[in-house]
Image 1 (cartoon, rainbow, N blue to C red):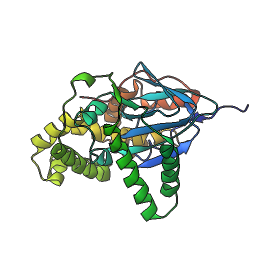
Image 2 (tube, helix red, strand yellow; image 1 turned 60 degrees about the vertical axis):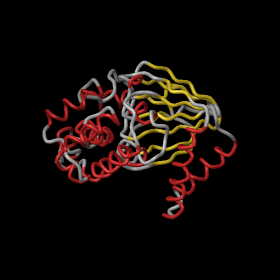
Image 3 (cartoon, rainbow, N blue to C red; image 1 turned 120 degrees about the vertical axis):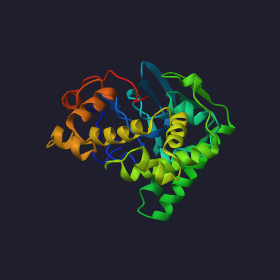
Length: 298
């Protein structure tokens, strides 16, 4: 058997496109190090088995299992069986908070819990494969159809048995979000997605949603467990993570291009999620080192 593929973040992958909804359908490559991104991840195991490590918590998924988790927590796929095939998507928060999930699910996921369900069937195998084809077809109508069907399928999780594997910070006491709050969070995320590389603050973000800054900050924190600044930083850090692995990458230039106003601010934010400097991350990622830290939070 040939050498196993190792996942590497890149400019065209989920880290480098932190506001894009991307679908995948392939053999799951193992990861040399944990990574993070600013989307909710949906994994459906079509065949074989996989093993995740998330903040000192082990999750094994087998054929027929589906899970949702917040990608802002560093996570690592440490094993995948030789026959494993999985499918799924990375959902930007603007899509995630527009879905009609059970009231307590979004805030629990955002604060570290993992939703796991085995209530799947053969139709999921066909649908996930078709949605992936549609998303890559180059036809905007087909791509939109795939996204709409995928979101409806995820919403259906609430009608079937599922479990919340709670871990991380405050997962058990996560705030409940109502539909009105979720719509506001979606508007906020939409604005941030288009402007995170620029100099924006809570006043700009709140104005885009037509609410008072304090109200925007409170609703966003209750719904996601993050401050507005935390989320803006996470998008920038996800983008920077991919840029750092380019051969010609200069750390100072990456800091500026990813929206940080200074190298010191970039280093501080990067250490907060990665537990190491951007330079050390680039070195260790290329040599297969280990991340040590947790999720971005308050």
